[in-house]
Image (cartoon, rainbow, N blue to C red; front, side, top):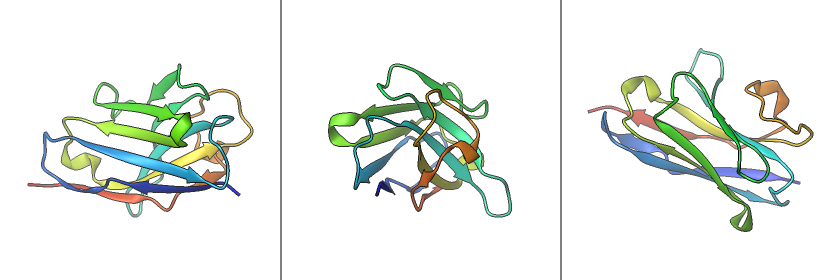
Length: 125
């Protein structure tokens, strides 16, 4: 069974950068669209970015567009999220997810069946 584990979170200063990593085990990632979401306690999960199976197409949430880049390395069973020029509003738990059955990139969280446990990102000076 596919399992996803995120790393790379932590404390970062406003204006700084970080890279989140999500490694899969139990199954290969090649067949699946992958996404990154974030969630603040008490709020709904927010779509950050998605990438298609071969990595040639990606889409981003409006609040992060231009500041984040999603990429994947299928040989390493890994998906990444690079974040630049972060601000306090980026503080959240970030989770990666796999869409096991869809073919396109959906921003809808309900389309993703497998989720990692998340990694906390805190933007503060």
